Amino acid sequence: MESRNVRFFNYTTIMKKITQIVIIMLILNGIVSCESTEQQTDKSEGSSTKEPSEIDIYDNWDPKLTEVWEPEPAIITPGSRTAAPSDAIVLFDGKDMSSWVSTKDGTPAKWKVEDGAMTMVKDVGDIRTRESFGDCQLHIEWRTPSVVKGNSQGRGNSGVFLQSTYEVQVLDSYDNRTYSNGQAASIYKQSMPLVNVCRPPGEWQTYDIIYRAPRFKNNGELDQPAFITVIQNGVLVQNHTQIRGHTPYIGLPEYKAHGDLPLKLQDHGNPLSFRNIWIRKL
Image (tube, rainbow, N blue to C red):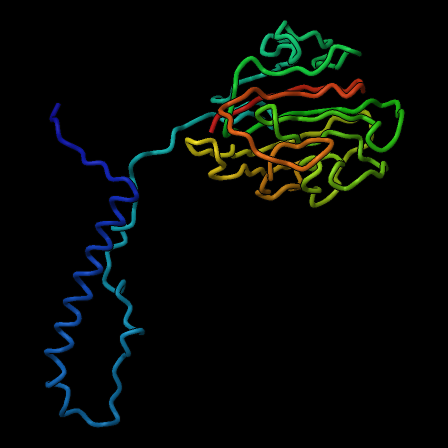
């Protein structure tokens, strides 16, 4: 088989070469313009020429100059409906909780697994993933109890904590008034959702989350804050929202330097259920 060398260019390399070509063209254009000035002096005063700002430097460009062929995006197989795509890490498939441990002491998680869902058990406490994550795409489905008890924050309360620190609130917010930055799909105590798209108690709901973790400098200072996009039940409820720090019940948010951390699910004393949880590292 004939061998040949293939040159790969990333986008930055191509744009540098394009910039060099533009500069050369502008220089040549200036030279040609100067040489043609004397030739055009005998034209009538009524003739018009293009102003420099009207010159389209792309008139004779080859469109291939801006085509990027390498690298080629990886091919993955999408899941049907809300099923996990082929490159996702499945955190709960409805059968076991081997990917989860108790946040309190690191022992295997003791929530109840039944009918394809895992449900909180009284006094067991929060659970977290064994694996740590940073930037990610997360899919998670949740259900508040069909029998309504309590109101406001005492009704169907839980939370999805990115990097164990930044909470996307889970709450039965169907006909249940509470503070707006504490209802379902809020970034807790920071950003209320764009709309309330909660289904009635006892029905399954979905969060699809795109999360960009915060960046910290070597000295521990914040370099770039975290950002999050949340789609609840197919509706955009957080649109690239900036997270201002941790999400405490009391006090103001602040950042403390950290790396990748586990995903955490909160036990707030209400028997919520979760299913079909998968995550993709970005």
